[in-house]
Length: 453
Image 1 (cartoon, rainbow, N blue to C red):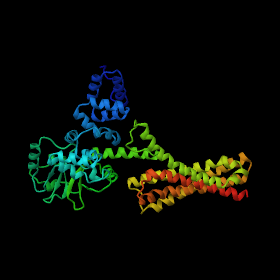
Image 2: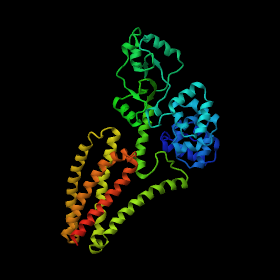
Image 3: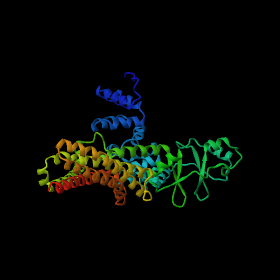
Image 4: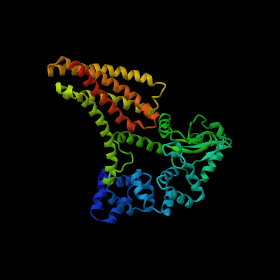
């Protein structure tokens, strides 16, 4: 096998090398190359190739790297491989993955298969997985790992150090021990820095951090990510409503949440699922995209119906047909800017019912000023181009009204959709487009009908 190029550390270069070696027809060379990659790199390769080629490479992997790779795959691609795995293989996966990652995999399986796998696990592993399974994957409970090290406040640090030395290893990303009382209720954290630098004869109670926050098990994953970002946390305890310790969340899980949310923000605007397989079969992708296109077609028909209602006016003043797209486009852009700002603000916790009216007032003023600025420019241009002052005044008034309506709609839609249990990131764009198009065409053509009647 040829030596890796200087750029082999880059995902694109590694993918190209795997495809080149696979194309040469050498299964053994491909196997060796895959064995040199880490699990996230293997996942990247598998998600970047067609399904048939993907399954061939999957069979070339050893059991442990194969199991490790599962946690890094998107749900759709992972589902392809899970369909072909029997109970024994799924139980083996549990040995190689953290509890929360394995629980995510089980949630993709049919209920009967999940129960078979759980019955096949040993009592300790089964208890850990069952503690995580009931929680939504987008909650703190779905993110948490039950593999924790706890200590009591009354113990001396030297006793804690002796206990840690007796352990063969520590859970990954352990930066602190969790302090609990006799009822397993969370009382604080004991950072390793304190443990290693403090007098070993003092007790845990004297040096523990009682201000370290715990996360409620039902908290949304976005709130968890925000807390980790604001407080620079590496790990945090997860508790139930009574304060009893259930597990912990670590920074690696939070990074996954941030990446997933960033992907979702881009993909949902186009009607794509965050876990959609880039190389999914044509039939499957065709069906999904057809639904989204159908929804947009309905909104287009609504806008077309508004235009049709003013057919006579357009026939009299042909310039209206030329200028209509300008009004709708400016309204659409203004509304999208506000909608995006509000959705982001809600995700960051900056926007809520308490300050929504302030934001609405701010966006109204900005929209009105922007509307008057650009309406004046368009009005002068239209009046000169078509030698019609009235036409300039009509489009100016229509632009101001449409931009203001779009900004108000963009400000209120996220809150309204959330109250209706609809994700504004998914539906907001479609609803806003309908509002801006219908408003723009109706106001522009309506005013033209009054002027040119």
